[in-house]
Length: 131
Image (cartoon, rainbow, N blue to C red; front, side):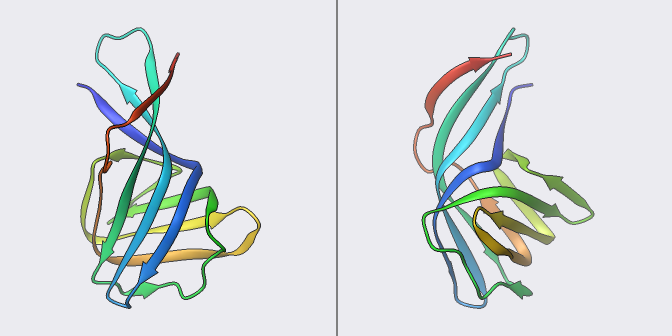
């Protein structure tokens, strides 16, 4: 089975917007690893997209200056927390969210809600083959 994994460290965020009910994280540069069955090597790509968290119960009110670079991320899917990477597309429902730590910004940015989704909005662009 083939799958794509989005890696958060080094990800570039252009903007975050929240109206108190929903938040949108505008991802400008996401590293995506494509793993294919029976392939000797994986491939590294980059892409863009919007990460949406809906029906917020936790909403950060302080953001870094943008563009900002992610150092680390915890992605919550109910009882499971993924650190620094998640299989895409993301289609989580229940108790879901994301906690982001940015370069040169001491405060964590956290959103918890009822649903979260992400997929690449444009064609991914190839970077390299990796082992």
